[in-house]
Image (cartoon, rainbow, N blue to C red; front, side):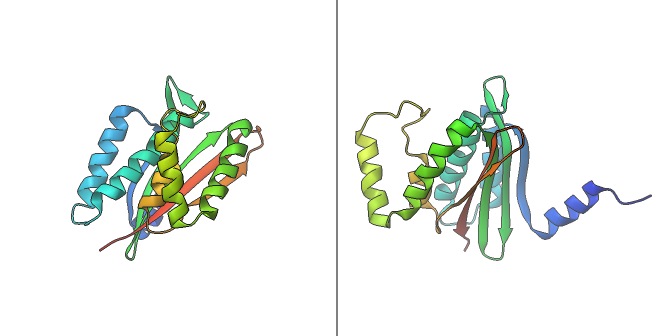
Length: 175
């Protein structure tokens, strides 16, 4: 028998030390299960709670804002890899072009801020009103910036059908 694509993908995931891979609707139950799996895998990490908080925030963003839906839940990809002493959390999902443009501007602005400016903006947002287009307090990306070890990476890839494929990647040092 000839080796198929899934075998290659399995080998690649194994070499990359994939800790977690999920693609589909991000329901409350799925998020709870994925969080438990990740919690077990990083049990010995001192900053386990920070990592889990960022993971949940990222997954909730997929669930709340993905333009691809299954009932009331967003559909996307959640991937956690370990390479050396780095844990890499990634999410990906489709957005409408109207949603993607302001998000891209906001993320670029956040990345231009110093650590102190991020803390100040975070405090302002806590005390302020909830943004109209937000399903939370509008603090998610600021939380991610505050808690992760490196600036996050994001990409916005236009698709032929007019949507945008959004990816977000966050890094933590292990050990």
